[in-house]
Every structure is written in C-alpha cells, then in structure tokens.
Picture 1: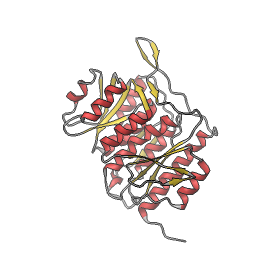
Picture 2: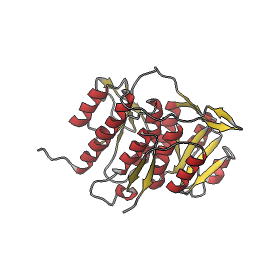
Picture 3: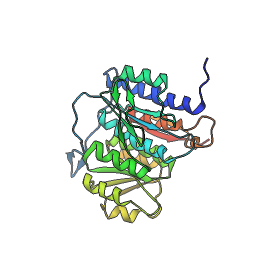
Picture 4: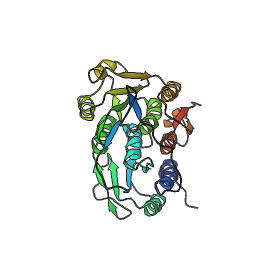
Length: 289
C-alpha cells in the first residue's frame, strides 16, 4: 500500500469522509431537523438573507491547511457556516494538503458529489479544476479577511453574527457549528477588537445581535459600537444553555480534542468534529486530553 503522509491523511479524512456524509443529506438520503425561527416580541423573524443562487445547486469550498497552526485553521472554521448555508444545511467543505494538491480520494469524492460551483479559499493558484469545474479563488491573507470575504459572498443580510477571537482555536471550534446552526456568519476579532473590514461587514449585514464565543481581549467595546445586543458565551456549556433557551433543538453532539492543532500525531482532526456537527445541526463538546 502506498504510504500517506500524516497531514495528507488528515486532509483526505476531513474532505472525503465528512463532506461525503453530509453529501448524503444534500442528495435527499437523510432528513435534517428544521431550523426554528427565532422570535422578536413573540413574532417569528427571518434572521438571514442569503446571496442569490440557483436553487438545488451544489457548492464545494476548499481550504488548504498547513501542517502547523495557521490562520487557515480559523478560515476553515469560518467556512463551516458558509458551506452550510450555501448548501441548504448540507456542507461540502474540503481540507486540502498545504500544497493545494487534489489527492485521488478527493477527486473521487468530487466526481461523486458533482458540485456546480467550487471555491478555493485563500489559495493563490488560478485555474484549478475540480470535477470539471474551474475553482473561483476567494483571496484572503488572514482569518479576519477570509471570514469577511465568506460573509460578503454568501450572505446579503443577517440579523445575527457569531464572533470569536481570531487566535482562539477552541472557541472557533465551538463557534463554527453554532453559527451554522443559526445560519449566521462567523467573524473574528483581534487583540484590539474588530477590524475596520469586520465592523463594516457587520453593518452591511445589518446585524442586530452578536453572539461572542470565548473571551475577547478588549474587543467588546468595538462590538457594542455595532449593536448594543451582545451575548457573551464563555464556552461550550454556555453555548448549549443559550441554544436551549432560544428554543433550538440539538440532536447531535461531536466530541473533539481542541489540543490536536499542535500536540497530537495526526493534527487538526478536531476540525472534522465542527464540520460533522454543522452537517447535523449539532454542537461540539471540547474534551482536551
């Protein structure tokens, strides 16, 4: 058997197994629980308005991940809710090797999934072809830029947005499936608060409520310049409690190790937990070990 590099194995595992299982839902082979409307003053309210696209189409997002911790890890997490909303709850999101090469396994998945549109997030290569489709490159040089680009591409408006620190991997793992469950974008704040592009994007979305996951280093004031309605959720337990209070059902919980970004032999498999949860309208339970 041909040996597979550890990180390549991780990328194939993420890309083929997990988006493949979600692809079954896209093909109508499994049912997904509906997303209940949130309410305002007792009345149902539509919280998101997606960018227009042909109904019934399939979109695949690709993200190349370096072996070591990088901003692309957080960009992948921002892509989880984006891939979820653009595919009506069944995300097709693939982690590539750092080189951006398409392994035979990923090519096989793409042929079976037959995406109508393919986006490469943060990639520099032009003209990459996946299953007969030329990838459109979404340029980004940071997690913040990637998240803003995804939000602008896939949402016309959204009353809610999820925020976490751009270097808090565990918070990102928790925030990504929450954002997918809410059909809301995931954006990031830095040490000095929201960047100007992030604040501008929140205003474009007309976000009225921000859900913060994890601790922000001095960023709350910049959030409240966008809206006064800011919910602070320190971790997964708080997220679960908040979701329950909002009347959102959760029937799936993915356990994952947030330390595997750097401290395990095969790294970043925790990303698959966030993607699995998103594909099943679930949440994650971080279990460091």
